[in-house]
Image (tube, rainbow, N blue to C red; front, side, top):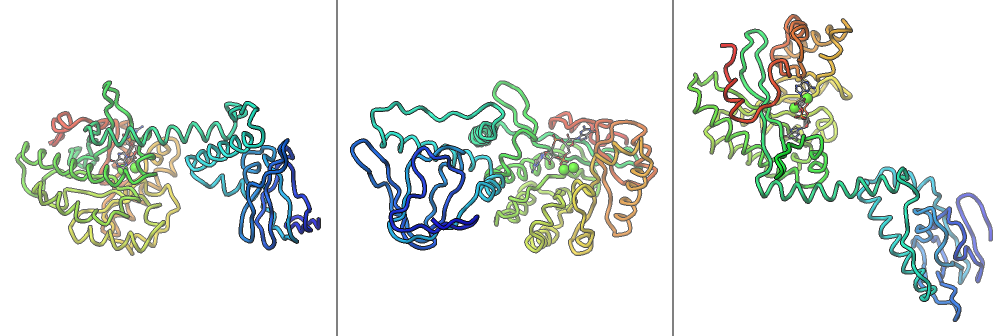
Length: 403
Ligand code: C2E
Ligand code: CA
Ligand code: CA
């Protein structure tokens, strides 16, 4: 066998590996034919014949296991070597659910091959090597992911999702003028699950589209209830910010869902604010621009959430129809101990003002932080100092506080 790091050349009849050999490589057939066979007590049994473009040897490679079958060339054959490093890199980039599925499938194949090889032997289920083994972590993540997705589907059907409303205060006047709607999942036992435990699952599947539609409708219905419960001038009607996920922008019905919610609930478009993150803009700039322009045409204000924490590409600020910059909590946290963080807050507030936008800052927890943000010219604030996110009735009670 001619041998270099990337290739193998085998003569007719030459063995590449045998059952039980360590499996550090997989192969891609360039030319020729490889026969995979089992060596049984009653003679060899051929499992597969592989030709150009076929991949083999991956089972042992992925699981870091020994070979479950033997391979030989039945004519002069050229192979490309796929190393553990190459495959490992691909695997590490794949979603944990896919990695887990791959391992489960490969383990089942290995068990079947062992059984075929010696049908009298007990087939031992493949076990992970320890609780810290990557395969155990993948399995746990994959199972959590699959289970949460299923439970979340049921939660949506059974009305277990709720919106809580965190007051947003006009810093100059101290008055609550609107809310950010934040998703919660109330389990049948009454416990409230925070979005960090499940949003990633919804965003990683198409569920976020259905949940996103529900959020739009629920936020619009709540705004209508805020409107009717508290008589106020048209231009003083409260607003509600909702968070949009990148996946929702792939939903061709997003725009009409927003338009229809505004109409059904008799809202001014300016009352429904849409929060998107920088990373969302940068992943698909043109598509996002088209959608944002349609939202803008409706009159819904657009906010950049978590502004300043991602890889800021400032050019989108004048290329996209953005109405406000929402500064991340990280700036407020740092501002008390690091005067330069307060300077950055001021510069971003000024940038927003110069661009005809307004600024919002989140995560204000102390009077001192509030003072810093106010002095630095931030327009709106949100944080535990004012209020945590509240269920609808409690939110209604604080509306207009500071009048
Ligand atoms: P976000 O959009 O940046 O929301 C702000 C988060 O900061 C909220 O956490 C809020 O409760 C929290 N927060 C506000 N003020 C303070 C404060 O003073 N101190 C501290 N420690 N935290 C504060 P929450 O509700 O757990 O939401 C976390 C994230 O989950 C949100 O971050 C957002 O990315 C996502 N999320 C929440 N609701 C939705 C939703 O309806 N749709 C989508 N797509 N994502 C959502
Ligand atoms: Ca937000
Ligand atoms: Ca945020």
